Length: 336
Image (tube, rainbow, N blue to C red; front, side, top):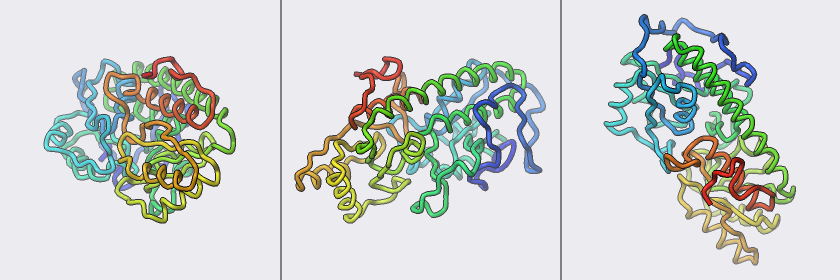
């Protein structure tokens, strides 16, 4: 399904790309299954379709004016459950390049992605950039990697180089442009990661517990030293049982955790059950804010970009759990 390998048969590639490797001419391995790059220069701008917003946003940054980028899944859409419409399938088949996150995030779109690959489109999972050893494999995910790697900006920065390489292979004439844009965006992600590390470090040790609707923040927790508790499993298809709710209520009460968080793509029902359970035991828990997990904010808003999404999450978490972060975030752009 890709010009290099078949990512639907591989949950993650074997290539580890460090951030410092984002330079022109960085090599990429190939296999016998590789398809040859276009025999002629593609028309510019060509059409690039991306599944989730976190991929589409980077694609726009790297491609610049050389591609028209179309994002399929909008704000508030859960990629775990999303089934492509006829319009989506038509967009995939009419595209030139298709980028998706991978690691089974878009599990119900696999057939549509496969159809696009069989139709001769360049179809690629951007998480092939990540070394298997860097991926988390929680027990509840039955041996498969946690797909929410964008929650760690230092990991997601490696995806920038992967997208740069895919576009360079498809459109060699744009190599210099792609390399320059990728380097600039990687610099922005490094600044985002530094901001997150700084403000999250101000959260008191006893309150460094992030309770959310589902397990989308494990990479965030590992990167910034937070204990992460998701009511549901990694996929939003899982259901939280009564015992799970009771165990988390115990945690909230015993640790005196001041806030829990809802997510833009997940029902608030279980979070409300936690608040009610803690109150019944004499501990008031607030909703610390609405976090972006599997989708970004509204198009056109700062939170509708990858950087804005993470800035919002980091700032919201730090402030709600007793840390010190500016109300308007890293760049003063967050919606009040």
